Length: 403
Figure (cartoon, rainbow, N blue to C red):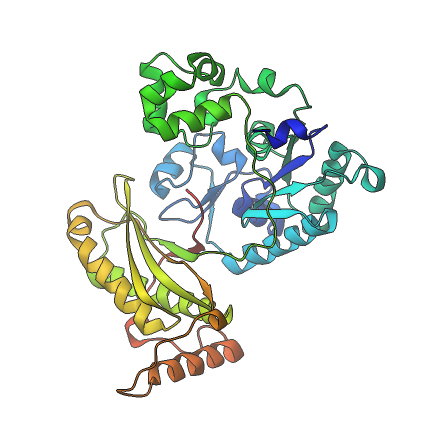
């Protein structure tokens, strides 16, 4: 099988990644914060500026631990509407550069600039202009990695941070990749890194030397083959565009203080209300509800349930989400809860599904959803709220991002 990356005559895939996105937006909008350590989020650090990272602060870290490491840090409340507006502006720049844009999250994307040399210059020249435009038009720093594959471009941008531009030219992939620590590879977390370290493997080059069979014996067939392929710079995936999202989600940090079960359920209720509106606005239906919890020891679990019939009803989604939360409540009582998230998966277009008809009673909940959406659309999301949510603080609300 031929691998696409070696068919490319030059490094022409860009990975563009905003630097400390939330914190950079705060520094952009508040000149007094520029050059100073900044934390976004108080109970749990959602983002830290590079000045704070230099002191050892990482996300998600408890706020009191972050402030102990960096006492001079300024803590800012999250402003997700502002962050999403900045994200849209950055993606507008991406799409001006090339139509081949694959968004990964709100602050990063792959861009394929192959074939643009005659009209736009070399990939490095294109990347340099992209960085200047994001800085000039949006006011944010961004790092761009340039390589022949998506995997390597992402690794290159991580090495090039902050506010950098780094290229691995065609033919230089293994020289760049092999000295790097194994944690740079996708799929290597703390546990896999420890197992590799116990086997005497600490660099990407040592994985390549170990060979595919030995890696499979050490980590299992799937993981072993995956990591060996990456260690030899093999990644045939193309930059994919035009795909509709298969899921939407939101999560809220609860902080380190003990929350009552009523507070946790109210937080879940607020998330469901928001996601239900987003689902209907996109004219989509969901079949799968996924609940994500993070505990005081930073361990995380997910629980999911799929439905026979897809739905966009807030009440149906809430009923399933409450059932998942009830099942997880014994763990919450024992271990505490610092974050709760919900995602709606297996999304389908509304018109592509034949909905089941109810012959027992009219569906008044659908009428209620439409009425609530209309009020919030006209007067703002706080125009109408549930009684259970009045006078409650549900923590920081953010889009559900990849771990």
